[in-house]
Amino acid sequence: MRMEKYDEDGRTALWWLGQMGLMIQADHTTLCVDYYASWDEARQTRPPVPAEELKGIDAFLGTHDHLDHIDHEAWKIWAKTNPDAKFIFPRKHMASVLADGVAPDHAVGLNEGESVRIGDFMIHAIAASHEFLEQDPETGLYPHLQYIIEGKNGVRIHHAGDTVRYEGMLPKIKAFGKIDIQLLPINGRDAERYRQGCIGNMTWQEAADLAGETGARLVIPGHWDMFADNSADPGAFADYLDVKYHGKVTCLIPEVMEKIVYGDGGLHDDGV
Image 1 (cartoon, rainbow, N blue to C red):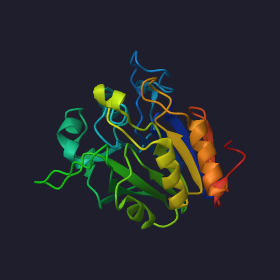
Image 2: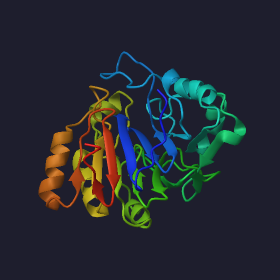
Image 3: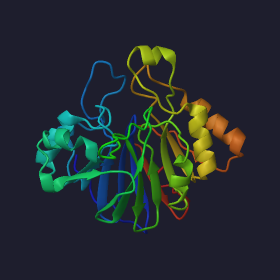
C-alpha cells in the first residue's frame, strides 16, 4: 500500500490504525504515528496494512519504546522500504532505534520542548507520564512523549501517546492554541494490570475531562481495541463526554482505516 499524497482545500486526512496508531496526511506530507504493524497472538485485531506493504511515508513517529508504539520489527522494515523517511521518537531511545537500521541522519530524537519540521508539519514534543514521568536525572530525557502536530493548513493535532494526566500537562497542551483533533488513550489502570506488569493510562473519565478542558473540536478514543485484558468502553467515554460537556466536543469512534477528513473547523462528508 503506497500512501498517495493528499492535498485538498487545506484539509487534513486521517486514518486510525488501531490502538494509538494514526496516519495523517496534509499538504503533500504523510506521517505515521505509533503504528503497531506486527502480528501477535495476543492481538484481537490484525494490522490493517502489513509492514512490508506500507510505503510513501515521510516520517514514522513513536511516542515511547513499547512494541505497540515503537514496533522495532516494523521499523527495521520501514528503514529499508521508506529510505527517505525520518524516524521521530524520544531521544532516550536513540540506541535502540539505530539498532533497527535507521540511518543516523534520519533518526530524530526529541525531548520535551523540542520541535522538528517534517515537510508541511511541525511536530512538538511534550512529556508523557506512562504511568510516571521518569525523567532521567542525569540527561534530563523523558522516555515517553506526546506530540502536538501542526500543519501549514492550520489544523492542530494532539497525539497523547500513552499517559496519565499530571500536574501542568493541560497548560502545556493549551499553550499551543486551539486543538482541532485529539487522540487520547482511555484504557485506564488497575491492580490486576499492575500485577501483570501492564502500566496505566488515563481512565475514560479522565480522558474525557482532558478533552473537555482542552476544548478540542474532535476527539478520538484510543488504546481500547487491541488487547482484551487492557481495554475500555469507547461508548462510555463518548457518552460521558457528551453529557458532561454538553456536546461541545465531537467524539468520533472510527473503524480501523476509515478515512476521516477534517478542515474548516469540522468533519467533511467525504471522510465519514
